[in-house]
Length: 100
Image 1: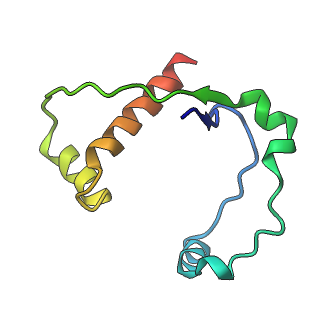
Image 2 (image 1 turned 90 degrees about the vertical axis):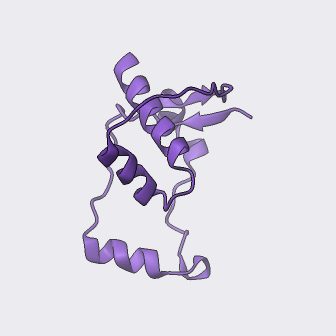
């Protein structure tokens, strides 16, 4: 299924949050969140100006060597599950950024 992907080179004002604010947000349950001030991005022409349709491509199984600290980082970050997917997403992001 195609998905919409945001172009990271688009300069949009993204608010900065303190670590304290982030921890507060993370502790909230879904029913405690107030979504009333969120814009409807679909009606915002600037969103569609930079949006791209991305089709999922089939994966190809490969084998390659990575430094131990790199592997450890991704396994810890993903809590052991999905670390290869996370590594793939980082590589795709790098590719996307450098091809634009």
